[in-house]
Image 1 (cartoon, helix red, strand yellow):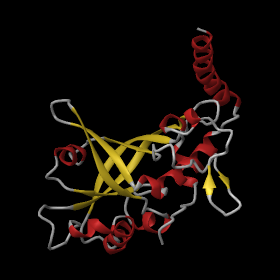
Image 2 (cartoon, rainbow, N blue to C red; image 1 turned 180 degrees about the vertical axis):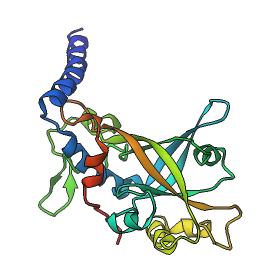
Image 3 (cartoon, rainbow, N blue to C red; image 1 turned 90 degrees about the vertical axis):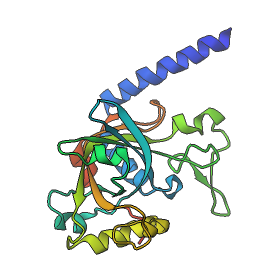
Image 4 (cartoon, rainbow, N blue to C red; image 1 turned 30 degrees about the vertical axis):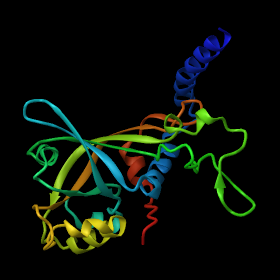
Length: 237
C-alpha cells in the first residue's frame, strides 16, 4: 500500500505547491497571461470553446462553439467597448444557448482547453528533436502528458452583438473565416445559411486559469489588465 501513500502525498503537494507558488510568485500571473494568449491561438484546439449560459428558469446550458481571437489592438479600437483580447463568436440565435447569452443583462462563460490527446506535445514542456520535430522529453511520465497537465481557462463575461453594418464587419468576417473556413456557409449574410446569424463579441470580466499541475504552472485568477496587455500572437495572417 506504499503507492497509496505516495499518490496521496503527491496530490497534497500539488495543492500545497500550487498555493505556495502563487504566494511566493514562483509562477506569476503575468507568465500565465502570456501562456493564455498562446493557448487562444493554438491550432491544436481547432479554436473550439464551450459556451455556458443560464436560462430564464435558472438552468445551465452548455455547448461547443467556434471562436476566433480577432480583436487585436487595431480592431478593438474601432468597436465601441471592445478591448484587445476579446473573442469573436458566430452566434446563431436559433440556439437556446445563444438566446440566453445574448439576452439583456446576461452573462456567459467560455471554457477553452488544450488538446487533451497525450500524443499532442505541450509546447511548454516539449523539446526539439535533431530533425526539428517537437516531442516529449523521454523522462516525462505519461501522467504528465494528458489533459490534467495541460492549460485550460474559464472566462466569465458578456456577449455583445456586433452590428452587421459596422465598419469592421468585413474585417471581422475575414478574420473568422481564416480560423474557420467552413463557417463561411452560415456566416452573417451567407445565402446558404438556413438560420439567422450574428457576430458576437465576448468580453471577459473574470479569468480563471489552470495552467496544469500546480507544481509546474500557475493556477488562479489572471488580472484583466495583464491579459489585455499581452500583444496578440495570431498564427493565422
